[in-house]
Image 1: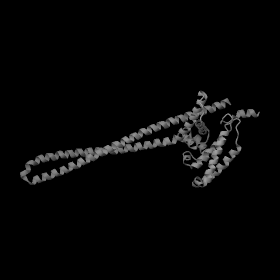
Image 2 (image 1 turned 90 degrees about the vertical axis):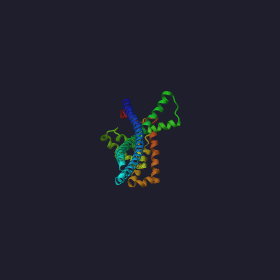
Image 3 (image 1 turned 180 degrees about the vertical axis):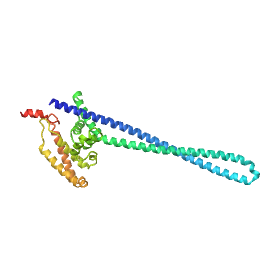
Image 4 (image 1 turned 60 degrees about the vertical axis):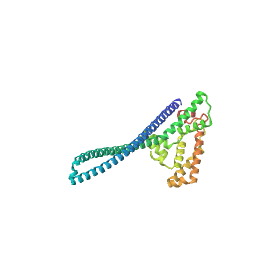
Amino acid sequence: MEQRIAALETELRKTRQDMFKAANEAKTLKDENTQLEDDLSDAKDEIKMLSQDMELKQKELELEIGSNKRLQEDIKELEQQPEEYQHSEELVNSLNDKTKQCAELETQLHTAEQQIEQGKATIEKLKGRIWGLKDERDLKEPLVQVGVAIRRQFLIQAREKCFRGSITKSDAEDVKRGYAAAYEGDGTADEALLLAGYLDMQEWKEVTSSLYGAAPGEFAGCYQGYQRARNCWVAVQAVQPGRGACPCFKARSEVERRTAEIFKEYEKDGDAAEGSSTVQSSIAKVERLTKEIMESVRGPAGLIFPVPEEELSGSNS
């Protein structure tokens, strides 16, 4: 029995470490997302400034082109009036200077346009990275929530035992949520474990698909009512009574009967089942029964682990 408990504690510690690692990764992703959004804002500001600069250059270019046109008209008039031809050289030099300035402005305008295009490309890349980080954050969010619930439960119990702290009503609810996170069905979190690479796909794909009735990546898109009922069914199927606990055969049978009917309704017409008050009422009943089962199977000592087989066989003999 001690070996069994030690193995279970080792497995629980490993799960907690994975959850802590997932929480850290989610925090890192949020920090990177914030930095990328700041970079995106800076890039937009730079593009706005470049656009304003390009508009100014464009106006200057238009003014120079207009001035150049007027100078050409003046030269043409001088060529037609020989008595004023002595001023033409000065006008030609002025025209050459204006032409050079126009060429420089056109070069600056072209450079500004290139910078704007590069800025737009940078914005698109930043948007892509931001969306990628958001997708990864959303994928791991169920794991973070599960990890938070488990660790909060642990700290509350540690405070009570090590520092003789009192358990408030709010603490008691957190402890219940911690037990639920660790031992009840949670399709979105288990699916995230698989998709995020914390479980081997080949080894666990068939297990999770059979438990939750959906291929990896599809459970989160199922109807909410179906998810609630499926999580209850998984919890009741997987949990075993602790020492001295009530097996709750009648409640288990009721859950299995009702969930089978619920699954058939969703298979027949998901939209209708999701909007049916009868189906939703049945799901709520299943959740209440599951809660009663999960509380009772912990036994007098509050255990939720199954009794080791070697201990059962020893007691029978």
